[in-house]
Length: 139
Image (cartoon, rainbow, N blue to C red):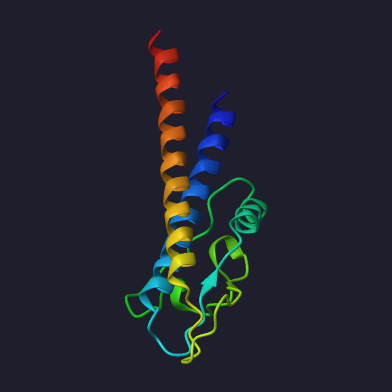
């Protein structure tokens, strides 16, 4: 019983972590909407989740440990892979800009909102599962 509970909560932890990382990526796209030659990036959430789960069983993605304050963080390193080790993808250009920027604010806002709603839905689902477990324990 505890093993299944642990697996379920680890799955949700991984999914929420990936959603938060994707939200940062989408926010970066929005922040760079006026940057010349900026290419909008995104990640396939399904592939990222499968990659994170396959890499670590059902555990959350591994974090690098910094042993010195002079070490660089992993988030700003190569930039070739996104959350869960899934490759960062470039968005398909809907309408070309003169300055080479591929950020479409309508697309980015929609993706940002969709991701945020799915994040909140996951939190609500976890809260419901924990409440039902507490009611079962308390009787």
